[in-house]
Amino acid sequence: MVFEAKLIKKISTDCPPGVQAGLNALAKTEAFTNILHKEVATRNLVFKDVRLCIGSLYRKTLKLASGNDLLIITLYNQDYTANEFAALTTFLKLKSEWGHGPSWKEGGKRWQLADYELS
Image (cartoon, rainbow, N blue to C red; front, top):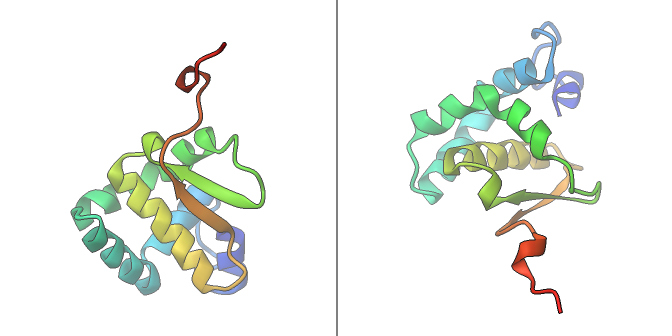
């Protein structure tokens, strides 16, 4: 996402290196802020609280990315706080506005073996 954002000039190419730095730059854009305001309102959250979690979002998401296939990204409610979830969906909605964004969905609960009885 960050590479593409630089390529299509959504953020400056002289943005500091690294994915998190690029996400931070994207989070300062008007387009991101507009989507975020809608997400905050829809989810009854506090804008400032959602903004605060953006700085550590990439590190956390990277740890939880296994299990997603390349066709559809699934965000599981149990993996993120409500604020992180709103920030993530904002990034994905922003990317979708650029066209050819990834397919994604919100998932309720990640499958676990303990959820099923073995006979």
